[in-house]
Length: 88
Image 1 (cartoon, rainbow, N blue to C red):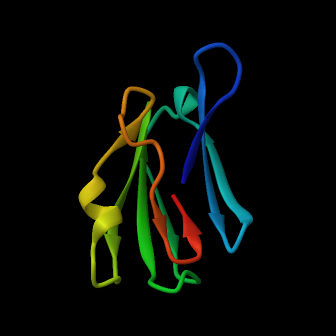
Image 2: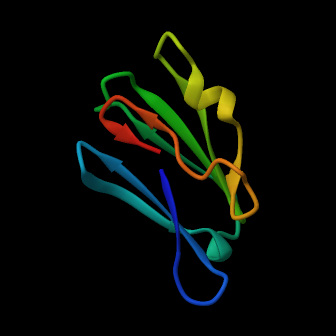
């Protein structure tokens, strides 16, 4: 998941796998919680998307760094996390 500014103060979260986009969310336009499961990742994971924020809820990886990062939003000090071939 990569957070990048779009128009004005809007933030877009882009989920990529092996450099290819899997999903894209304009966080200011998300109106209800959504879940994205990425079974194709080296360690399958579940991403939760809510208005204004995104996080990795579950991952099968041993380190759990991406899960422990918690919610990412425009006010987050850590806008990017990487897990093998999946970019956060």
